[in-house]
Amino acid sequence: MDLVPTEAQLSACVTCGLCLPHCPTFRLTGDEVASPRGRIAAMGAVAAGLVPSDETYAGMMSFCLQCRACEAACPSHVPFGQMMEGARARLAKDQPSWRGRLRRFLVGRVLNMKWLLALVTSSIGLVQRLGVMRLLPKQVRLARGLRPQRIFPHTVVGVHDNAPAEPAGSVALLAGCIMDEWFPEVHDATRGVLQMAGLEVHSPESQQCCGALAAHEGGAGDAQRMAARNVGAFAGFDFIVADAAGCSAHLKDYAEWAKDGSSVAERTKDVTELVAELIGAGRLPSLDDTGEQVAVHDPCHLRHAQGIVNEPRAIVRAAGYTPVEIDPDGLCCGAAGLYMVYEHDTAEELGIMKAAQIRGAGPTTVVSANSGCEIQLRAHLDNGYRVLHPIELYWEALNV
Image 1: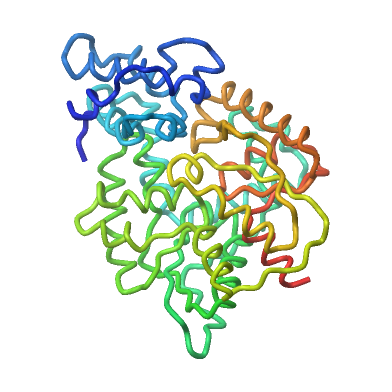
Image 2: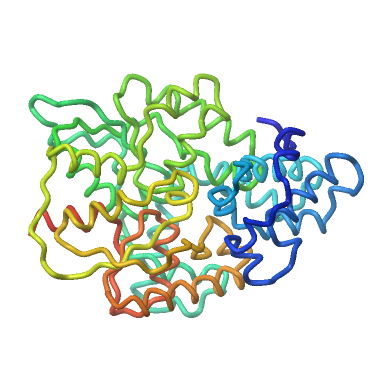
């Protein structure tokens, strides 16, 4: 992984500006330095030694959500996501601030400490039950967007129950970091739906966090270490499935992060991608139309990074509902991993905008295929709204 954007990547941008209306930070500020081409110009100036890799430059890079909406709009196919990861990795070496070190420690080390995550989860569950969430600092009050947490959380790692008698294939389910602790219902629905289709589902105990958050925060070494571990953990399975869009997008980029990483990238499918295929092939049922509507939110790393748009809507239809659009541009909701903590005000503004779009659409049930987005949407919607993963909605409909 190059620690600086390459000359070929930098020269690919022709500064046409087609990305500008798709960039959430540019739309909020109207400031060129908060746009993709502004950031690329800064990367080029630093690479050429024209300006220092200082706090001003770090602020420009930190303000980016890495939503990759610019990539989807770019006629030159500039790999902006890779460039941002490289630029932040370079910053981690050039300007190792205590805040950056702390963020990289959290996403590079803490997220793989299952015992510590379980303790945090139990603490959140206790805070929720005591009703004192409002007393937390605003930067961590995003926990109000979590579903009620168990004081004694459970894990799916190593769970291989209800395997089909004659499996039609094998799947390795990425347990993930926060998904395993905070969204076990999504894992349960994923495992149930895939087993219904005749697939044998495993969640190998030797796996780790996919490394996406570490890569986004400039922790290149940690991201490479986790990718190398997962290449071995996921060997021998027909498919590797992630039920969080940020994770599936990163697994598909493993060729950039690990030796033999392409073996993971080529077998990885987002769960919405695989389940939509199974429904289309008749291996999973389509239920009768209920006449009810469901709003569909597109996570950035599903829509922009992977180009997966139709599949979640196909799953909503198969569950018996009519999908309703909330935003044809797919503007970022503001979650973006740790962004909602360290750029709280901007994340809050984007979250309020997204919640207003959902309210304007009408339905009070919303599906979103990424954990951070689910947290953000719940935090900004009223209690009368349900926010689910599309797979949860489908699994729920199958079991009514």
